[in-house]
Length: 280
Image 1 (tube, rainbow, N blue to C red):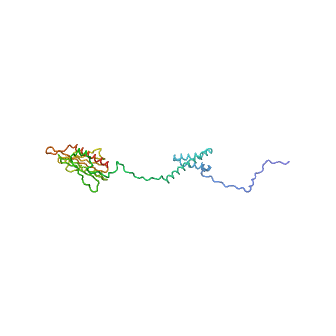
Image 2: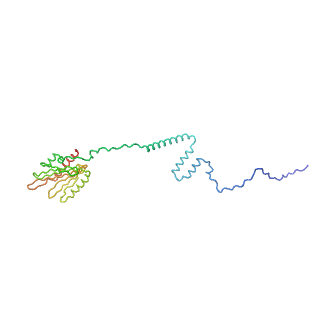
Image 3: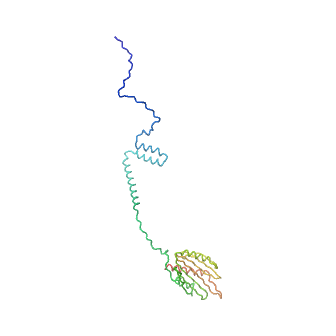
């Protein structure tokens, strides 16, 4: 019987199969790929990237987080979200439409027709005759026995002027003038300043008088021992000036009445003139 060798035969290389070739070795990358690049593309990956770029702004980050929350809302709430979105879009669209309509078609502006001036501010246009500016009662009380004479008009101006004079038993002089002018207030200030700067006369009283016109100032001035009261009044576009003086004889000497009586006479005349203007 022949011996059986227990030595295995030498291993032979397997034949190369047709169509099989060795792949060349691949170089190892210097850096590993960004894990973010390995994530699936889509909204979640985009918003994750956006979050990383806006972390410096808290307000912007909060806004982005809100957007991300909307993107990951479960599908069960998709219908509610869509309805809310449509409602918001409808509201914004309606508001925009109303705003655009208002901007394009503003409400028509009705023409404003100026009404008549108030009776308390309308300028005066007419005047009573000079001798009718003061009531007869006032004349009898402060200028009894005098006669009235009207003064000539000042050219180009609406005015009325009258004087009451008497030499019987002494001396009485009452002078009233009213001038209508658009610059009555300036004339008032100039007249008041003129009384304060009169040369040769001494001003012993200078004060505002309330309750007569819009403005009124009373003066009492003296010259050569005799004095008289002057009252300047502004009422709308009317300048009113009153002068009053009266003296009686004490023997051969002419003596002035007390200043308070002269001031009372001038005030009464001014009140009569203002009342006349209101009735004109």
